[in-house]
Amino acid sequence: MGSSITGPSLEGGLWAGIVIAAVIVVLRIYAKCLIKRFRADDVLMLLSLLLAIASMVLLTLSVKHGFGGNLALVRAHDRMLVLKYVSIQIATVTFSTTSARTSFILYILGLLGTKKTYLFLLWAVLLIQLGGNIASAILPLSICRDASILWDPTVKTTCGDASVIVPFAYFSNSFNSAADLFLAVFSAWVFWSLNLKTSMKLTLIALLSLGLIAMVASVIKTTKLKDVPSPTNLGTDGSLQLIAWGYVELIIIMSTSSIPCLRPLIVSSIRKISSGGMSRSYELSGGRSNKFSSHSNQNGGLFSSHSNRNHGFRKTPDPENDSIERILNTSNNISANGEHELSEVPYNRGQVIHKQIDIHITSAGSEDDH
Image (cartoon, rainbow, N blue to C red; front, side, top):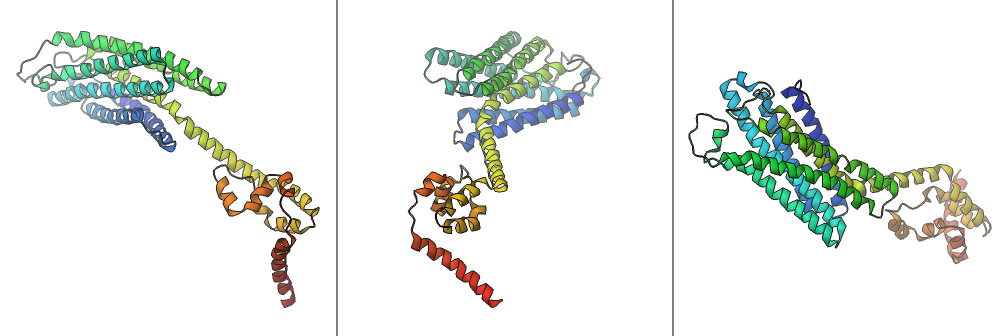
């Protein structure tokens, strides 16, 4: 991201990224509800999405008042608003990213079972990044009795030792970078060990490897911490790149962490499409009804007449509606299973002739009327 990027262009690009991530997260929630496994990791991801949207609203307000340009050239009131929105925004983006990363770790923990070494390692990463990021987000806003000093230079208040803020921010962001790298590699190993098709494994691993981009974004963001804007440190672009790379990291973590959860939804959709395709191809070909007709002709022709009248309703059962088809029409279900089972059906001539006679009587009556 070069210095040629302006506030409005950054805003538009990030909104597009957030919308894509939001769609993925919503599909994730739907997929988990579909299989009735909506859990703590999904709650955290939903929280991350809400915080991300709130952060983008703050970014939009910041751009409206001049964010992305030289804040020294902006009116004092607008400059104060930009500094205020950016200060709050840094905290909300940090919370959102932390929530998304924690959600992914909890999701991986659920796949590992009782492997204590890996469980301990993941819990350590989770707790360290959680504690470090919470402190990193809250510390700048709480170091002074009146937080408005961060954007209003006229405020008089007392502050703690502000020299600890930047070193602690470097530590927490450096750990985040290492955590993103670890999770990208470790999750790839976890999914490779699962009982999935090789093509599915490779697809998931390729998508999860995008987490390496999140690590790169975190590293770049860490190098820009010195550009955090304040009344005494406006900078030439108002910390544009710091904010931009923070959002890039957030969007990638939200998206890549949610994609593996979409598998139940994808599998369900493929099954429905396949089932619909099988039904349509059967109705067009009529192959099964021909077999049934040929066999029934050998049994006296009555099954042939009955099957010819109803072969349009005879189709390969839909896996989702199979039980309904069995309840509604047992004979149809038996005949659909093949010729062998059809030959085992007791031949009750009286019952079959009775049904057939009813149909022919109606037909004969119609012909007499004519």
